Amino acid sequence: MAYQHILVRNEGGIAIVTLNRPQALNALNSALMDELSAALDGFETDDAIRCVIITGSEKAFAAGADITEMASKSFAEVYSQDFISKNWERVTRARKPVIAAVAGFALGGGCELAMMCDFIIAADNAKFGQPEINLGIGPGAGGTQRLTRTVGKYRANEIILTGRRIKADEAKAIGLAAQVFPAASWLEDAKALARTIAEKPPVAARLATEAVDLAWNSTLDAGLEFERKAFYLLFSTEDKKEGVDAFVNKRKATFKGK
Image (cartoon, rainbow, N blue to C red; front, side, top):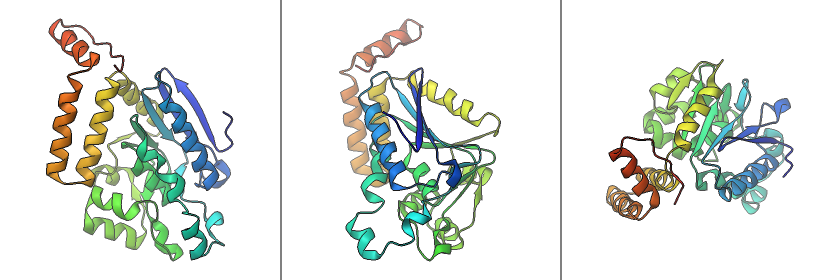
């Protein structure tokens, strides 16, 4: 499929999606998010793809939602059109691990898109933030919810109400970024992590991310019940037999997703 606003390539089982609106610092509009959703749909049906990276340029992951697209919209329009909600949340439903590899600006919608992924890798020049308040609005794609669950109520309020930018080292310190790498190598470092994940059993990886998401969104009892059932379920897979046999016989496992 030909895309106008993203670039897609496959590197040895790693699908890499590059946001590609350089003239707008990769600002996220409906057309781009439709393309990202379509790309994720395609990855789901390709068994060769084991992990997905969403990234941008060295200057900007995504500087925010496209303000020009929002400027003339009224309440009635955004509400009736299900603006943002209709196509942004597809990332959260991806059935394969998704890494956000962030360099430069990840502001507003860009920060929210990164938080929809399973975890965030940041270049040391990355800058995160939710500056929507400076436009007279607030976060609309999960910023108040995912940021609060990640960094806590008081820090989230401070970040959202001031609209300030968070540098990479602070993002790691508060739990927003999992790791920080040099800007010269951040994408290669993200690929190395993706390759490590791609070697793991796909079914177990998917159930693990589902369990972690449930820990975030539900009660401890519900999460523990899901975890236990997932644990039992994995005993029925060929990958479980392969993993145990490889461990016992001191060899590297080869997982097939079965």
